[in-house]
Amino acid sequence: MNPQIIIFLGVALVLIFMLVAFSIRIIRPYEKGLVERLGKYQRILDPGLNLIMPFLDTVLKVDMREVVLDVPPQMVITKDNVNVEVDCIIYAQVTDPFRSRYEISNYIMAATKLAQTNLRNVIGELDLDACLTSRDEINGQLRDVLDTATDKWGVKVNRVELQRIDPPRDITEAMSRQMKAERDKRAAILEAEGVKQAEITRSEGNKRSQILDAEGYAEAVRTKADAEKYRKETVAAGEAEAINKVFKAIHAGKPTNELITLKYLEMMPKLAEGDANKIFMPYEASGIISSLAAMVEGVKSSDKPPKKPTATIL
Image (cartoon, rainbow, N blue to C red; front, side, top):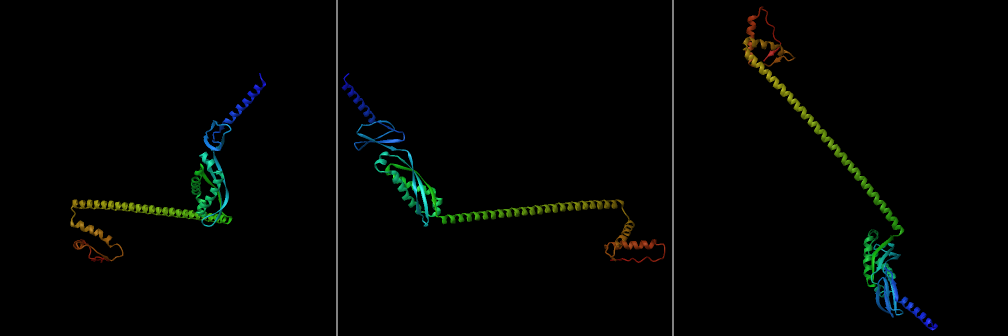
């Protein structure tokens, strides 16, 4: 074979291989490709194997993954004129590779500077206490502002997180003393509440004990009164029954006046017992006494005068 033909075929194969190599572009799954032909934008290449015009097309790869932007610390003045050192982190992601390439030269630096500016604005509208207790609110405000501003660049701000807010040393010490005072105050309040609750419980217990004692005493008095009442009723019923039986027995025996007189005579010594020298007797007893005197006069066996009684009968 002619050597010239062999050289020509070799050169042709090399050219073909170079054309194929320059015509193929491989885009990774997390990338997008921007095709420029002679300096003019043509199209976007998706991940995978793509063919372009060799020597005419240029492919610019854009990373579509979320990136973390660390905003440098800076001194910010709060609403109550306190200097605090603040830094934050931004989580951003490219959503439009065309605008992120052609609308801004370096969206990472632009987003960082924008975050610093808006961080001063947001912190400057709040006092120190609000800054320390409203981190979520500050994060939300910064995210909304940055997302609105970066939307023109084809970049979306997903999250903004404040890393730290450091007030001056003297302010930190004052806050520590204030926190200690608040804790001591809460401890004193809790202790006072505990003592108060204990006193209330003790008072309630004493009150309940006194009520139970009073109820027990009242129940005992009631029971004793019922027992005394029952005793008196039983005794009265017994005496009434005894008197009734005696009365019936007396009437059944049909006593004579002499027997009745003797019964009164038997009762006289009992009536005369005691230190009193006066005895009050029913008016009806005068007739019985007269009969008794007549009977004594009739049955006495001697002329000796009767002994004068010591008691005066009225």
